[in-house]
Length: 236
Image 1 (cartoon, rainbow, N blue to C red):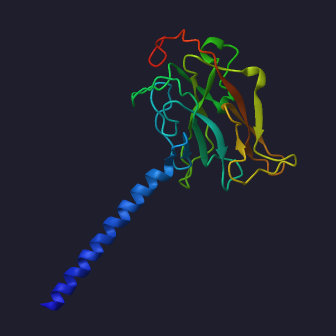
Image 2: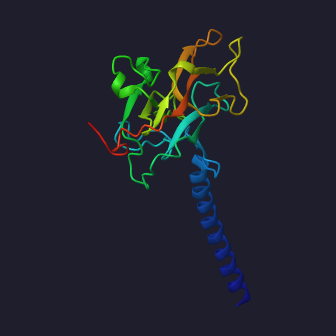
């Protein structure tokens, strides 16, 4: 009788171990992909987050939350041939919340970096692309399971009352003057009150491989101009 009880106890502990391992993997995986802090910062791990929607009307697999904008990129081991994590920050406190309803912004557009569309702003479509900033990245998974170099970015228009000051934009580079890419944590990040409005690629002369080499950051200013009353859901 005691032997049977010991056997059942072993089976119970084994079952508990399996359930705990599954729960730990699922829960840790979720919080590893998106970590949101009370400071208004969100860190998205996008190297495993590939595929999904690629249009301006649906939420992407790797996209900032309501009221947030992308402000930095980080790559831990591939020298910015791909992107490991992105930093989103809550930039628009005076924007009315969407209460979980998508879209978060009045209008967005998709920029194809494989077609050299490295900036959110397009001089041929100024009305649609002015005052837009990066909120999401998209890439297709590679054979190793890691995300390939992101090829598409989503740019959304600033909420009513907010503008971008294009006269004071900055560029943050992913490498030093010798072309060696940074491996430190969050060295490629916009300054306070700046948002990412572009990111570019170039071939590294040392290895002949395409890397992400810079991000463009532009300051956000609040003008208190609420001309767009339907800022959250208006579409042409």
